Length: 419
Image (tube, rainbow, N blue to C red; front, top):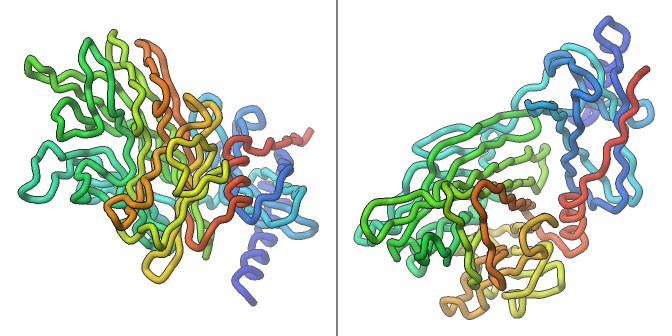
């Protein structure tokens, strides 16, 4: 028997054992209907679990039911008030798909599959031996002989493709302050001064990792929250924290033999004291991605939601942006997606021109302050949300649009409790 048939057999056997024993009480039927084609992508969904049951995750099972077939589905319960039940809908390619799930009481075997492991000052998100993303919380110094003002903590590198290609780059000689995927602000008005947190060699300010707010492993995703302090170097000497930023990074598990996975960024910004933090209009700032040095103008492409390419994407606004290319005898890339509630949505893009560094090195950035200021007031919470679809192979505009649509408008889950 093939692996898939064996898996279905054991899932059906488990389902029958649950149903015909004291553990087999069905709690609810959960229906998910897809209004648009999903092109085989995964779609994360969730529900308020406490509205259905107070049962713990140790006595719950989730099954997808299709005709007479029943397949056990990994799920994850996010603690809180209320708790949320998370799982992934694995889609096909047809329009109007409907997926039916059953939540059943029974002894659970829902092990953590995606895990966060600390090693040498970094947190590595991985599924078994498959590395997905690495986050540096320790300070990384520039190469010997380069001004130590370029040191930085609180950034992602590498971001790996599903097949293991490295898609990020740090400390390139042309821009030592570039750190994989990172989120500083360039020109900021703060307490009468203009501070640059991006070009850290200016020695006006920097961004530092301060602490983890959470680290979670699970069967559906691994997640961490990291507090970053935006530190001003005062002209009079000393330092002052001007802005607190909490980055919650969630990495969803890739399915077996799957050529893509999802990374969600939830960024919360709050002033650190009573002084406002005014981000001034400038051509780059915010969530940036310095891509692999193996991409240039001849082997990589850009395509935005508005049909712009690398020739004309810079300065344009977009819901999503594809950056992909040839790497290590493979093809890989990322669809960067912006959430509709983000400031200045659809957000302007900073995309390096084709003649960058002569060879066409690649940098991509959602920049909400590219064409307007953003005033962050004390005691207010400001949120930016992004999703990266990371993949091997190539993605076309239809697939990218679908991925963004189900990020912006997750399908509703229709719950039918058992009376």
